[in-house]
Length: 93
Image (cartoon, rainbow, N blue to C red; front, top):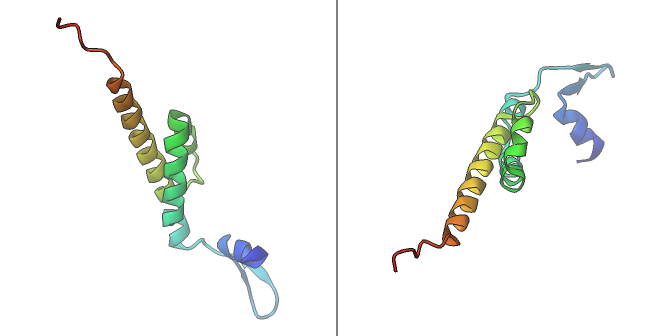
């Protein structure tokens, strides 16, 4: 937790001599976590197609991209279905 947890997630290391250096990020951070997927899903669901710009950013993890796209699709389908429920198709007297 705290700053140490944040710095650790950036891929920084500290050697026994006290010198620090940047290392390659672990594979987990490139793919993302389940939390990234849920966060992306919620953003995609509530903000819709505006989040397409977010998907194109190179720093967005893969799972967050999947969550954004899934959330956008689910939100679009639900909005479409709810609009169809209010359409009056009773022209057949």
